[in-house]
Every structure is written in structure tokens, then in C-alpha cells.
Length: 419
Image (cartoon, rainbow, N blue to C red; front, side):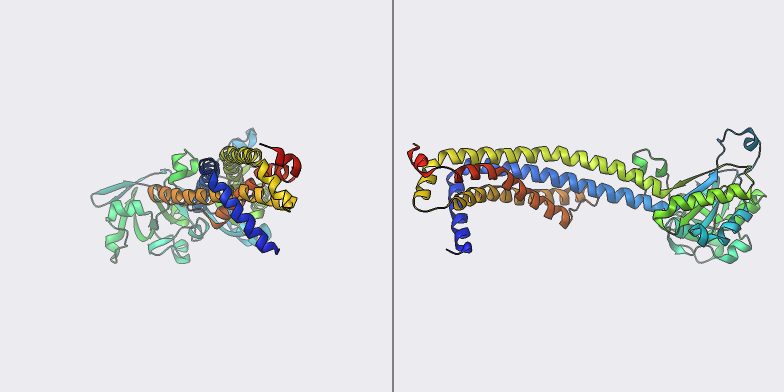
């Protein structure tokens, strides 16, 4: 008999046997269905959560490095010195050694005395975070100008009083996200200075980070960006609050940050201490937290899958006891041990596969429903679906192996004596 014909006969016999005990079979299938659906739900929610968190972290620039003076240093000598410890000459030095330092882009961040001044346009008012930046800043933090343009070298060199505003500010002051054509229509007063709005930023979402109380969850849509040179002119000094740098390589971001720190310490003869943060470090921390949560969730969901596997094991063990005489008859007429083992193993795998497919169907439908309700990307991936189906098959094999092996080893004479 060919292997295919033998498999077909075993499959038909397995289906008949499962059909003879519909209730017991259905309960075993239900156990696997619940287990697979739970594992899929946890995996899908975890994947969707990761996507949301990393997409919001990307709004800061995944290769970003922030370097600034460390005012908390305990040295009295350093504490007595005023200033940010970073100026335009430091910026020029970093730009001149960018390749050696592993720097792709760098933007100074210059803040005014009033961090959130009142913005006026006619009779309309708004409060916004105003910072002076370089033209590279928008590329570093993945900002996009939805209307108008960003700064150019002429704006920076001539210290023009131009601004790029966030969408919330544009909506409050202009009532639209489309930039007006006439310059008189786009003039706003920031504090006591008039600025011409040349661009409006595209909206950014950091809602999830804000919802969990993260410091990174500040509103990104009520910012106003002006040339850092213009902010320095308003401040009356050339100091830079801190630097935001884009590392050329994500994997070397911490090494680049350390090299920048050493360069600044050297340039100022150790009179200032500096600290740095890298997005790479924040992402590594996020990976550990999200990875740990995902593992705990999958382990918890797998308990229900384990219970389903135990249900298959119990059902198949009972089936062997009930069908001992049948096994003896089959062996007496020439069935081999492998035939008996394959039949019982096939029954266990069928239960787990059917349960797995139903669990996948429920998991996919639940994911789509949750995605529609929450707006989160909770769509299971092909890898998740394939993995869940593979797990259900493995559970069936493991749960059915011992009963199938015991059935195959029964002695035909003893089996025929069974009542």
C-alpha cells in the first residue's frame, strides 16, 4: 500500500472516530481555540503597541543625541561659571569635525528668557514654545513642512525674523493650515517682536507618550521655530542652550555622544561639565520594557493553550481505553504499530489544527474589530498567524504522542480480551 493511500485511510478513520464522540471532540477543540485566540490577541496587541510607541519616538529623531551643560556637577569651580557652556564656536568646531565624530547633522537649540511667550495676530492670541534652531533641525526630528517652506541659509545669515509654526498655532491664529500668500497676512507678534510666518509644520502625534506621563509626551503641535541666529540676536548673546545632533549610525550613537562630550570639555579646558542623552538609549530601555510585557502576556495566554493541550491528552488517553478491543482487532488483521500510532496521532493533530484555525479566525476578527474601534494598528501579521498555526500543530503532536504510542504497543491478544 502506498504511503499516500495509507495516510488517506488513517485520516478517514480519524475523522470517523472523532465524529463518533462529537461532544468530547468539540470541547477539546474549544480548548485549543481559546488558547490560540488568546496568544494571537496578546501578540497582536503587543505588536500594535510597539508600532505606536516607536512611531512616536521617531518624532524626536531615532538617531538623535542631546548634549548640554551639566549644572548638577558638584565642583564649586564649575558651578560658579555662568552660561550654557556651548557657543557658536563650539558649533562650528563640531561641524568641521563631523565625519570624525560620526555626526550626520547638528542643530543648535537656543531658547529665550520666556519659554512660552504670548503670540498675537490682530485680536487672536496663543501661547507656544518658541525655540531657535538651524535649518537641519527639521530633518533631524523628522518634521515636515505642510505649507510654505523651512529656513534657508540666507534666513540664518541675515538673522531674519521669520518663523515656522506648528499646526495648532496656525489654526488658532490664522484659522487654517494653509499659508496665506500676502506677507501682511502672515505676520505675528512673538513677545514684542514681529515675525513673518514662512511655513506651517505637519501635525505630529505624541498622544500615547503623553497618556503614560512620559516627559517625551509634550505637545509637538504648538511649537514655533525661528532661526537660532535670530533668537541669539534677541537674547543679545551667542550662547546655545544645547545641541541636538543626528548620529551618522544608530549603533554608534552613544560613542558619538561621548566624543562630542569630550570635545566640549577639551575646548573649554574642563571649566564646564556636560551630559548627554541618546535616543538609542531610550529605545533600548523601551525594548526591554515592551519585550518583558510581551513575554509576560504570551506566557499568561499560553496557560490556556497548555490547558487545551492537556484536554487533548486526556481525550486521547480515554479513547485508547475505550477502543482497546478495536486496536486488538486491527492488529489481528495485519495493522502495524506505526498504523495504530499514526491514526491516534492524526486524531490529536486534527483536533489541534481545527482548534487552531478557529482560534486564528477569532483572533483575526477580534483584531480587526479592535483596530476599527481604537484606531490602533492591531492587524496580525503573517508571521503571527503562521506561528500560531505551527504552535497548534506542535501542541497536538505533543499531546497525542503518548496515548498514540501506548495504543501502538498494546499486545493484540490482551487487547482482544478487553471488554
